[in-house]
Length: 125
Length: 111
Image 1 (cartoon, each protein chain N blue to C red):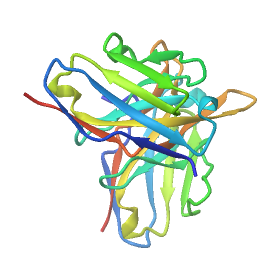
Image 2: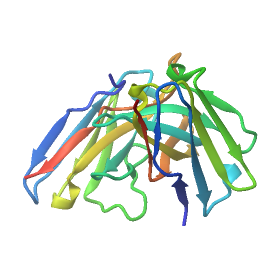
Image 3: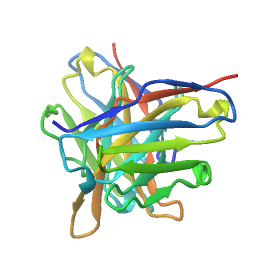
């Protein structure tokens, strides 16, 4: 079955960087875009960016431009999200999510399925 | 502050029906399809509805979705205690800040 398995929880100090991995299985890795979404404690979902596992191209939410880098390793079907210059406000659960797309007459229909189990990143001095 | 607007909470008794609204604009819901996600406590979001009103396999027909103009609605009938969760609507935004957008989430309490 299609599965996304993320790396374990991290504790980082302010100013440090964190790199979270997301290993895909059960489907052709390069055929689906992958997104990263984060959720601060008690808060909603916040989109961070997207990577095309086929060519490696990326697009990031403006809020994270300059601080986030998404990469992939096709040999292990793994995508990575690295966030630098961490601050306390970056404490959150980080999710990878596969994009599903369906072309219709009017526009593309896109949604997320499945999601990884989440990785808690705690930023604390 | 989320791009899409959802009520913070809704509640109903077991067996009853509840609806959760999601309001947006012409740059997102008005011109794109809506999906809904269920997040049980301590777990990752799970797809409930896609393409406004379609259910993935395994999702019971107690869950339904609809869209009209710049708003969407999730309906849940025959409420069960296991439906207690946070529910999020999502779509894509075609404005300058193009990309996926979500509602702030709605906490469903089954009394």
